[in-house]
Length: 160
Image (cartoon, rainbow, N blue to C red; front, side, top):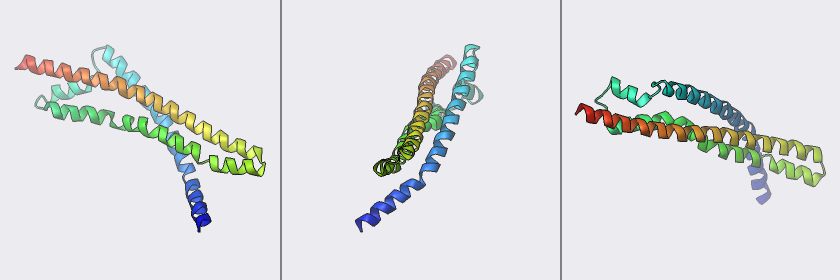
C-alpha cells in the first residue's frame, strides 16, 4: 500500500513539470514587459506626466483617499503576485526533476542525471531573475504611488 501511494504521488508530481515550466517562461517574459512599462513610466515622470493616481484625481476629484488607495493597490497587484509566485514555481521546477535525477543516479545513468539537473537549475535561474525584476519594479512603483497620494492630499488642502 505504501509503495502505491509513493508511486502515485511521484506520477502526479511529474504531471506538473511542464505546466510549471510554461508558467515560469510566461512570468519571465512578463517581468520584462513590466520592466518596459516601468521604463516608459519613469521617462514620463521625468517630463511631469506619468502620475496615474493624480490623473484619476484630476478627472474625478470626489474620489476618497480610500478609493485612491485601492487604485494604487490594484495598479501593483499583478506584478506583486508575480514577484511572490515566481520563486515558488522555481522551487517546484527544481524539485520535480530531482526525483528522476536521483533515480538515474542510482541506475548509473549520468547523462539522464545531467539532463534533469539542467532543467531544474535553468528553471530556478529564470524564475529568480523574473522575481527579482518584478520585486524591484513593484517596490519603486509603490514609493511613486505613495508620493502621488501625498501630492493629492496637498492638492486637496489647496482646494479647501
